[in-house]
Image (cartoon, rainbow, N blue to C red):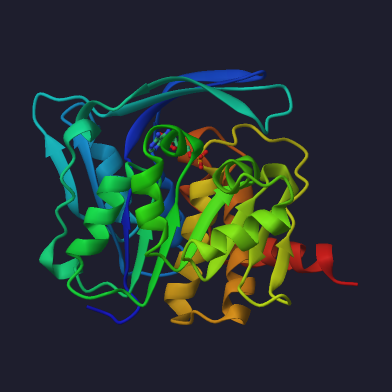
Length: 307
Ligand code: AMP
């Protein structure tokens, strides 16, 4: 196995999405889907650990495989239903309400890591039960070189203590601004970042949706900001955060670097990938990108902030 291989654990799901401008009752979703699709544009050594029911379409798995994503770790539970999430976006297309979360197969998910991937150097703990994130980390054959973790308010509300145990063990945590405030109890994002970094991680990424993302390190001088692309039309923001994380960790895995400067470039790449994601419903915008399209978008980001 290559020394820059990436393993992602997370949901592979069905989503129902309502926006003020259109709806889709059933699209493919889930954190691991978006993470691995985005990362697959950076490295050919991507695997996922996830679970679905027998209702999950074989052609969607084939699509992941066609992007080079190793799905050996995708368990298919006969007679069970896949994770289902229904979200509804507000007019600003930035905030949303969760209308339904049906755990289904996720309720008893035992993350089994294929032997061929237990040595991965880069581990992405996608948004999912903290207990499963922790189990995945503990089951790796060795401590990966970099562990990135995403989570959400849902888990802060129902499993805070377990969540904190995982946070203590990771290198990079990605959350949105409201979640950073909830986790730290601090309104100022700078103070929130300092408190969260004291919980364990060396780096914190605070995602601010259409307002970009901030990266904080432990040094006072380690603050970096990546804008989000001001797009003319956002069709569906679902998966933007996971796509961002996938582009971020995929970039680091490809370059096999984990220092501050690499992280700065990585969040620009994550933001560029997220901009493709929100242009279409579900993961559609991530299906057939070319290297030129991605390079061009990264250039636009460069121009946006250079002065
Ligand atoms: P994002 O828009 O980046 O926050 O990610 C949206 C994806 O997260 C959707 O495709 C959902 O299937 C998935 N998702 C929603 N709620 C949860 C949850 N509680 N745990 C894990 N995945 C979730």
